[in-house]
Image 1: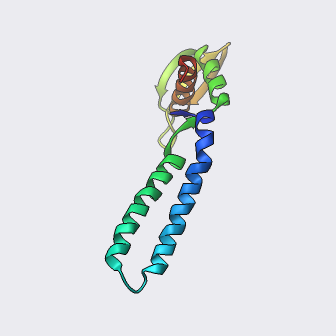
Image 2: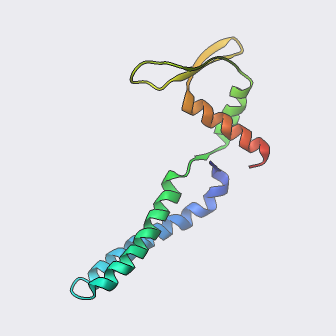
Length: 125
């Protein structure tokens, strides 16, 4: 998980790389539409790898921000009543927590993300 502030300077560059690789693929398809199919395939595979790497970097890396850290800090001060409680067939399991006398159901994935963000920020990560 990457802190959003660390990733911000790179998102623009990665997005530009993504667009450039897409433009190059389209240009190669136009350039080699009649001849040089072997060279086209080789160059296309290289560009495809760059394209997929850009997609993974931009869209699939989980990030967290200051709001997540603050919410994680709040959650870490709460008392866990029930962990991973069943919440119905079509709903995500929840953690039941008691924060200052208020019992709240929080989806397990949200709880884990917020606590992780708070812990990583405290470690200096």
